[in-house]
Length: 442
View: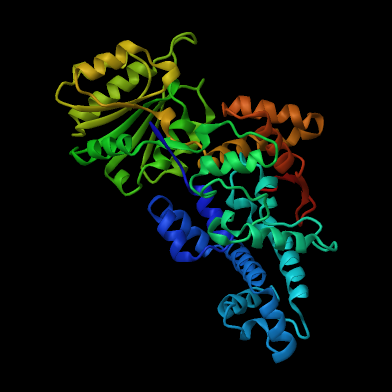
C-alpha cells in the first residue's frame, strides 16, 4: 500500500493565498521543509500576496470602490486588505498603490502583475508537471477584453464553495471535494480540465508509513549501520527516492553508503554523494575479463570486512540479486534489511528472507516525483559533454540519446519538455578574452 504525496498541493495552497495557519494545519506534517522554502522564496511569496489581493478585491469589489469614490480611501487604508503585504510588495519593486484609482483598474493591475510574475515561480514545480496547466490556474487569458473579468467574477461569486478555501483560481469550478487534498487528486483534476490524463502514479505515490517505520526501527535498533549497494542490480534514481523521502533526522545514524560499482553501470552513481548528507564510498570494481563482473564478490568481501574489522553490526543491502543470500546466511549475528526492485527480484529470495524474519521492501514504492535535482545534475552533465559538437547534432535525437545514456525513464512529454526548456534555449557566450562557449540555461 502506498500513499499520495502533498508537495504540489502544498505549493499551490501557499501560492493562491490560503491563510498560513490553514496551510500549516493541512500540510506541515508532510511538507514542513518545503513550506519553509516557500516562505523564504521572494518570487513565490510575491505571487501569494498578489493572489490574496485579487481574491480580496473580488469579495470586496463594490465596497472598495465606494470607499475610494466617496471617502478617498486607498487599499492600504482599508481594513480588509493586508497593508503589510502591500508594503512588502512595494519594497520588492512591485508597485501596488496608485492615486485616483478605482476597483476596476486595480483588478486589471493585479491580473497584469500576476501574469508578469507567474513564470518566476516555474522552478517551484518539477519538469514532469505540465507548467502550462499550473500557470493557467493563476492567469486569466485576455483579461483586458471587455467582459472577461466580469465573467470570472460572476463564476467565482456564484460557485465560491467549489474554490479551494474560497480563494480564487482560474478554472472551471466543479464539486470535487477538496482539489488540494493530495497531489494525485490535484493532477487528475487539472489534467482532465485540459482534456488530458496524468498516468505516472510513481511521481506522486510514496511508500506507506508502515514501510518507513520499519526502516526507522531497523536503524534505531542498530548499534552501527551502513548501506551496501550493488550498483549493477539497483537503480540510482530509485535509491535516491528512498533517501529523499525518508526522514532526514532518522537517517543521521547511518554511517555510510558503500557503492560497489562497475564501469558498465549508470553514470548517475557518480553524483549520489553530492545529494545526500550520508558519507558515500564509491568502490569501482575492475574486471579480469570483460564478460565477468566481480561486483557481487567485492561487495560480499566489503560487508564482511566492515562487520569483522569496523564493528558495523547492521546492513541495509540494496540489491535484487539472490546471490547475496549467501552473504546474509554467512553472517548470522549481523542484522540485515534488504531493498529490492520488483522487476528484478524473484519469489525464492523473498521467501528465504521471510522465513528468517529479515525485513525487505521495494525501492519502487518510494515517490520519484521529487528527485529532479539529481536527475537534472546527471542530464546537464551528460548534455555538457556533447556541447562542443552541438552544431552537428539533431537536438531532439540528442535528448533521446542523453536519457538513454543516463538511464532515466521518462515519457515523450518529459523529454520534449527537457528539449524545449534546456536544449532549445542553449546560449552562445563569449568571455572577456573573446572565447566562445555554449551555456545551458539552468
